[in-house]
Length: 262
Ligand SMILES: [Zn+2]
Image (cartoon, rainbow, N blue to C red; front, side, top):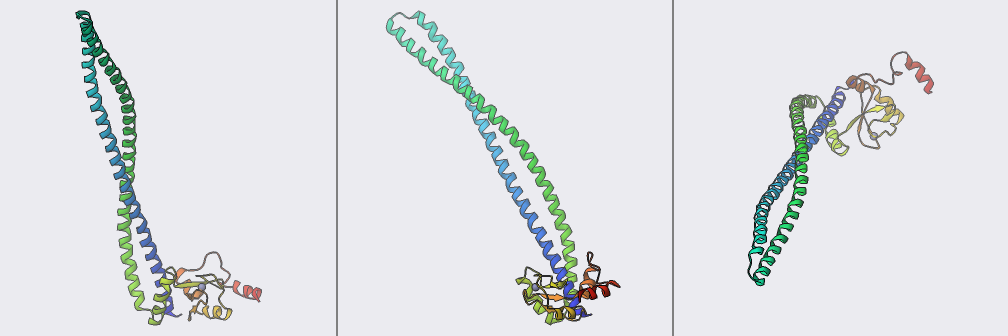
């Protein structure tokens, strides 16, 4: 078997694992950041509602004390109406009485509206605080998961990089050159197995003669459609193990199969 080719196929596996690892990291930090942003926004909204509540309560307090004063005034004017000496005085007191009564009425209405508003705000506050607590809990869990993933993948990455380094040393430069050129252009996959006579990268048929040669595990083929390096069965089995669903190529079945193919 061509060891250089074998190691090249192994290198592909290691690089694909590294790609997956980096991709798995790429999503979780983004998600955690997004959750953090949402928690901050929720907290800000909740603070705003609390400021609104404070404002309504302050206004309410002020209006209520005004109302007490207005009631006293109304009572005073009513009493004064009986004490006046002239019609002009009576008219003046009546005017002030009516003015105070109007204000009192309008204040009472406003206080009523504020009560409803306050009730709504307080129910909003309660809901938002509950939501915030849930979001904070979820964020905390995601942060813990992220910490674990980072810790986990850091170790795995180190192992994979070490493996990669030692594999690279045992691969002919000729193969590495093609590999490094093809991999970035083909979604990170430059070396593929032959699968039932087709390229494992693009699923186009491999010419029969080339396919037969690949069976020895000595040579590689370059897919004429996608340009990837195709390796044969012995290399694939050495790296991936025996294929699970199809077993006819192993032991005594091979003979039957070949005669069926002809
Ligand atoms: Zn192909």
